[in-house]
Amino acid sequence: MNFYFDAAKALDRLDSKQGSIKGILASMPQANRARSAALVIETLKYKSVLTEVIHTSKLLAEEKKKITSLNLALVLVHDLLLTSGIQAGDGPVKQAILRHKTRLRSEFQRIKVKRAVTSNLQLINAGDERAERIPRYVRVNTSLCSTEDAVEYFTSQGFRVADPLSDSKAFSKDGHIPDLLAFNPAFRFHDDSWYKSGKLIIQDKASCFPAYVLNPPLGDDRVAIDATSAPGNKTSHLSALMQNRGKIFAFERDKTRFTTLSKMLSIAKCENVEPIRADFLTVDPMDSQYAQVTHILVDPSCSGSGIVNRLDHLLESENKEETDQNELDRLQKLSSFQLLMIKHAMKFPAAQKIVYSTCSIHAEENERVVQHALSSEEAKVAGFTLAPSTSVLPSWNRRGLPEEMGNPSQAASLIRCVPGEDQTNGFFVSCFVRGGKVSSSSMKRPATDLHSHSGSKKRRKAAKK
Ligand SMILES: C[S@@+](CC[C@H](N)C(=O)[O-])C[C@H]1O[C@@H](n2cnc3c(N)ncnc32)[C@H](O)[C@@H]1O
Image 1: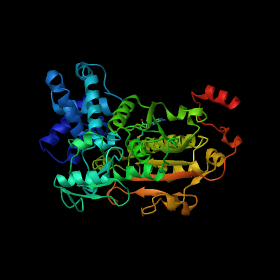
Image 2: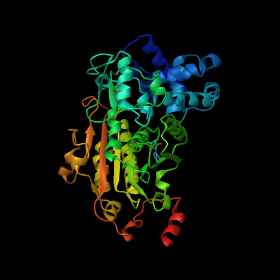
Image 3: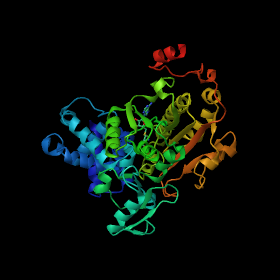
Image 4: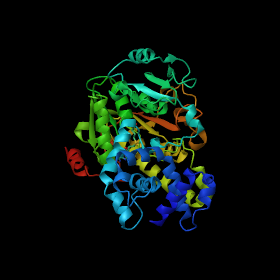
């Protein structure tokens, strides 16, 4: 528990302006310094959301004998909600937090739904100055209203069409994504009645690229998959692009995030979406209900390195080597998982188009994953290649990194966004299309399957038929 007290003390010193962050971190007790410093930094990043959770759950009022300060509550609640749990043996302080575990978790989820964030990373409050150059984007949910209605709605509230970075009442239509509006970064939507009713969806510009590039077809018999859906921004975008017709199977593995997804889809009235709580990797592509799936979105968990934050550099001098090694291991694990997800999508027999995206800036999760996917057995068997640049948002200038591709000219088919420079968060988009015709024998599962799947019994049955 000592390191929580050390971290809380460092936060107290920061609050009372007893030095710079760097100085205060450097003067923390030697034992566990790197660990406590990391906790201080991480807690600062999430301070606003954690403070809101602590206040609304009345933790301090009810546990004032054990949890003696807001900062102590902050570091403990940080670990409870954002890591694998409080790293300390049982004792009265830990017990005091755990007594409120359910309420703290539900308040945290409530805030995430309210802010319509796609990941915990988007709750980071310590944005850097680049964040001030990224407009606040709002996508009009065209299943519920038109962009013209939305423009009229904002105009009637005193907004005017101008560069959104110029002042707080300026907004504009985005130049790349239809139905996307850009506002001043300082503008808050969370109390807006159109936002609350699902007519407006807060979604970063780059995060709108995947569904737009996937461009699912229209028609009552058209079927798409969102492989990794929660909280549902891209799913609801797909739904709107399909004009709420046809069908989208929206998979999400995580229980809590699945609840968020279901709520989001219901608020946005996405009637053509069937949310399914399942690990996409266990879904049997040969199951007859997926026989018509032609378009698949794969937007899996990633490092989130494209999402801007300012405080990480402070850790560099503290534990650089440790961080580098951890980061490498993490990226390796993530990229193996990301590759599996794309390869699994390629096994759907009628899939024609697969969009893979991340909010990472690392080539390990982007171009290199794409490169591996292209040379995989699954891609060869099904005949997947990269879509030509002309069908992957050609008006967007920043493309993939040529030096990371086996064939550098393929980088033109990829999209990159650099945080701040492109008025978006950092992002990556790729699009695979089925090139040649697929014979029925080539649709069988390749021999080099990396995973065991829970649907394997069913699949064997289907294969026998
Ligand atoms: C980057 S988020 C998706 C964001 C979402 N596309 C949006 O725009 O709102 C990745 C999501 O995939 C889920 N996920 C990760 N692995 C999965 C798997 N194997 N099957 C289904 N969902 C998975 C995670 O729980 C997380 O909610």
